Every structure is written in structure tokens, then in C-alpha cells.
Image (cartoon, rainbow, N blue to C red; front, side, top):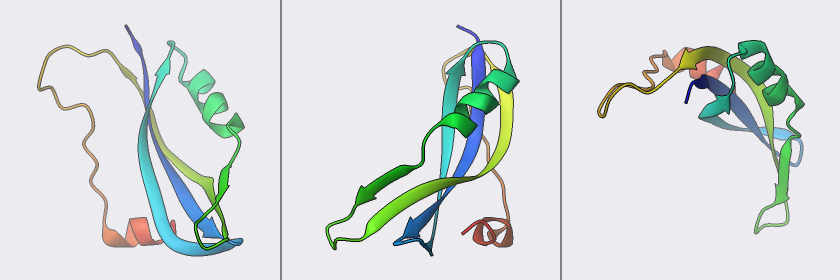
Length: 93
């Protein structure tokens, strides 16, 4: 089944302050339209929960690195290759 793979970054906030953590996700979106995948990502509510210390933790969208068409072809095929400098990643946190 064809679809879109999106590489997306979310920044962690603890009680509204940056915690220095970034979650890089590879998301699968069904459909042929990358803009539809982008709209879905941008419309997804911020994930928020209370941690064991009573602090509010939120993960806010900070960047969509890529949205590319994807249809698996074979076992062992590289699906995601992600190369970044430490500076690029630390700037997101």
C-alpha cells in the first residue's frame, strides 16, 4: 500500500519550559498527497500529560523534516536514513 513517510520533530516542554529533549519520529500516512499528511501532522493536538513528579509535560511540533512517498519493495530495504549534526538537533530543543 502506497503512502507517505514523514520525519517529524517534537520538542519536550516541562511546565512550559524546554527540557532539552527532542523526539524524532518517522510517521506513516496513508494516501498519495504529501500536503494532506502535512495538514494531518499540523492539526494533531499537542500531547500533554502529568509526569510522576506532578509536572505537566508537552510535546510540541517543531519541524517537519521531510514527507516522501513510500511503498515498501523488499525485506531489509532502508526505510529511513537520518544524518544530522549535533548542532542541528540541539537547536530544536
